[in-house]
Image (tube, rainbow, N blue to C red; front, side, top):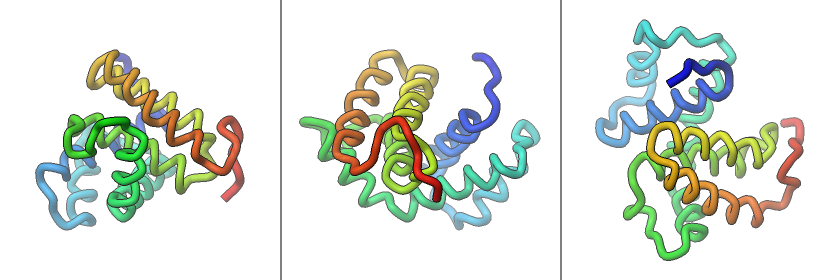
Amino acid sequence: MTKVTGRRQAREWAVQFLFQTEFNPNDLDLALADFWNDEEKKPAARDLTYVNEVVRGVIEKQRELDRTISNSAKNWDIERLGVLDRIVMRVAAYEMLFRTDIPPVVSINEAVEIAKAYISKESGRFVNGVLDRIQKELDRPSRTHKPQ
């Protein structure tokens, strides 16, 4: 796998952290500090801030995100989805619903690429379909952002 940087790397770190906490829930602040102590992770300050904001946002809004994903995943209950599929979609749905500084199409494309890289091509197609249905329900353009 090629090394990625910037926002893509930040999204991958958010997915990794959320995956880790799915199986080992701990004190969030301690878990984040421990996560960033890994020598492999030397984020720029902006990436660290972004990841922490997304992680906290996804955890805080998880019920709402899961409801939104379930409503858009035709015939799939959120608990039946694979853990990584669920987490990748939570991150993207969080960006689409609560981060107006990111165009929804960017969140979808990034989620699809992460799903294809970490799960499978089929997963990428599934994630794309679910997130596209969510995007169609948004009350904002898909290709532009609004300053926060």
